[in-house]
Amino acid sequence: MILSLTRLHDRVGSAIVAESFSFKMANYIVPRFKLMLSYDVLPETQDSYFRYVTQEMVPAMQEMGVYMHMAWHVAYGPYPMRHVEFLAESEKAVFDMFDSSEWDDLEARLLEYTANYSRKLVRYRSGFQM
Picture 1 (cartoon, rainbow, N blue to C red):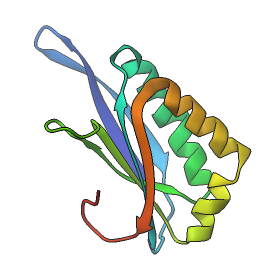
Picture 2 (picture 1 turned 90 degrees about the vertical axis):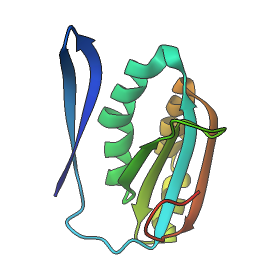
Picture 3 (picture 1 turned 120 degrees about the vertical axis):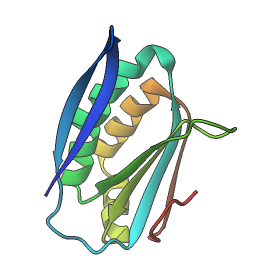
Picture 4 (picture 1 turned 180 degrees about the vertical axis):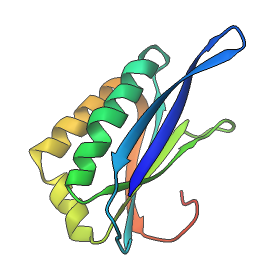
C-alpha cells in the first residue's frame, strides 16, 4: 500500500504548485499503540521541515515498524500547530525505536525545525486523540 501526500507550497498567479510524496506502508497491521507528536513548525524552516519529515523521518520510522497514520494542522486555539500520529502493533516496537541511536538522531533533527515539541504514547483508539 502506498500513502501519498500532496503539499500545496506555492501560489503563482492563480495556479498552485504542488509537491507529491509517497510512503510505502505495511500491507496490513493491527494497530495497538499510537505515538502522537505535537509541535509548532518554526516559520523560517517550513520547506526544510517538510522535506526532512517526508523524505527522511517518516520512511526511517516505518522501517522500524512505526507507521505514519495521520497529520493534523491545528488552525485555531492555544495548541501546537502540528499533531502527527504514528501507529504500531506493539509497545515493544515503539520502545525499541526509542532506544535506538537512529531515533535519537531523527528526533534531534526534528527539534531543529520545531518548538513546543511533545510526544505521547497511548493505546490505540480510532479518531482524534490528544
